[in-house]
Length: 310
Image (cartoon, rainbow, N blue to C red; front, side, top):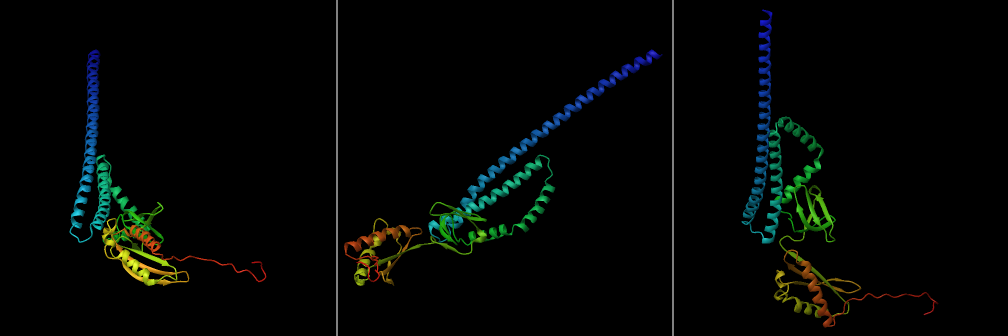
């Protein structure tokens, strides 16, 4: 009887062990299969999110360029200003849209990987509030940059002066304005610090030419020569097309011990005033030399004390 029981128990234990081993093996395989399938699905989801984000960014760039150009083409602004404004607005809108798309795509990727983004969003909101309270200058820069763009105070390519800094605008964003000075230096100005802007290329420019002659020169003769040279200047094939109106010869603007100053104003296309000014100064000097108009010459004298040898 005992042997029979031992035999039955041995058979039962062997079957139970085999069942346990089989169940454990199947469970492990099922778990591994489930993890593998989950990893594959997560990877596919992440790849899809990344691809969709890239496509959206490309579509956004094309859409923004077309919409901005179409909207601005309905205005009566000159072509140069229209192109500058379109480029500036497109850059700002595209950068803002890119930031939004990247944030949303990042949250979707984290959610796909199984991370809880609810606490992350709540933490980001609290952190954003704390940063906002401590970054008032950043908010000030952003608000001022918004009005600069909306009012079209200046755009990329304009030559402006802000305080003691002057240069060509290379970049305009909601936070800062980047200038390139004449000497090649890059000047970064936070928009919140911009109070007064001198735009030298808005709509049209003006060349201001002061010509100084000697005190004994016939003033009427100088005015006649200036009119003969400048009245037909718009027909000049070299740069006449850059002059928008006939030059204004204002006459004598200053008298000093060294000479007499005549002033001429020339209205030009934007950013062409310096080239026109250099060329007209050269031609005026040549005309004065050919007609014997003397330029002021500084002289100095040394007074010797009494009794000193001559």
